[in-house]
Length: 173
Image 1 (cartoon, rainbow, N blue to C red):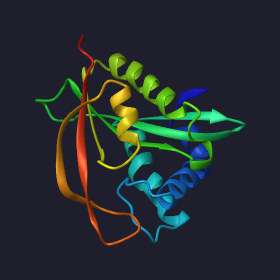
Image 2 (cartoon, rainbow, N blue to C red):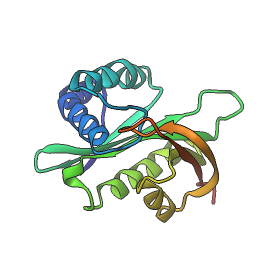
Image 3 (cartoon, one colour):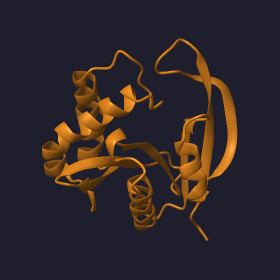
């Protein structure tokens, strides 16, 4: 089941969200963090970045529940600049490594598409490490490649730099 969290639900979901982020980083997800990455680091991200944005209405957080726990999450962040009232960013699509290949990522993105239309946005933008499997998911959901930046992000396990692919999906049609 997919739900969009409010502030109260967020508090109850914090432990699951921190566990998912921690597990994804340790499984090699390139989502802005590198090792070492502790559970406290994960909790800090959710509390300082996401909770603040959720409370102010600057973003939406979606979660997928299965077997009584949250197994995945994604964020929709509508652009705040006056010249971008049509655009929103997709951020931190995370599915716990133990729950992958069960359609949760796709289901989260489908819920995000619905909400994008509800908030009257027609352009979604995201970036992903070029070698990350999520790139194939995004392409399968209709995202187009805008371009690639070499040496954009650090590999989460080693000192090497990797390219990032920027992608977009036009929902105006």
